Amino acid sequence: MPKLILVRHGQSEWNLQNRFTGWVDVDITSQGEDEAKRAGQNLKGIQIDYLFTSVLKRAIHTAEIILNEAGISNIPTERDQALNERHYGDLQGQNKQEIGDKYGQEQLHIWRRSFDVAPPNGESLLDTKNRVLPYYKEHIEPLLKQGKNVLIVAHGNSLRALVMYLENISKEEIASLNIPTGVPYLYEMDVNLFINEIKYLEEK
Image (cartoon, rainbow, N blue to C red):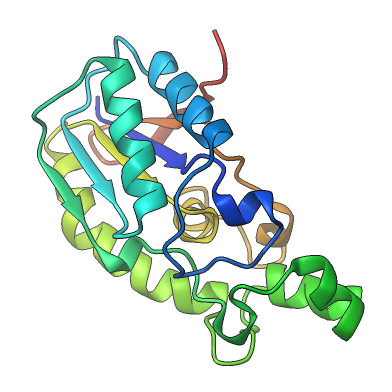
């Protein structure tokens, strides 16, 4: 039975600084490296056949650490912009608290958590979903249908968009879903890709 494993990158430099990151290519912190190591340790013993990441270094670096810790090497790897974080437009680089102080906490929450409202010159979660899902269906679902196990290391919002599809979560419910950094979500599926079980692989 195929397994799909989703991991949000470890804590990034701008996660630490409470900044909107989006497509800005910052790396992970030492804590992010530790989170990636724990994720890899928790994936030891699970066969992984394919790796997919975004093109952003925080996802790529996290994936490299995970595979190293899990003792996995030489697997087919694909990186694509379709799996990038949501583009935050004019908010990128801005401190979230300062944006809340300037525009109000309600507007901040709408920009961060609403399904179809985009920040100025940026993407909504709907926009993100509209690039993540076609890529997933074209490149990843066929591998799962072949019984392959796939690891995706990406970002909070690109993974929220995918989880929304996988778990049939409504646009109202998705607002409360938060994906923590560095914790593997493991979906065990049947041959028709119906989910049999969801496991959160935290520290053993």
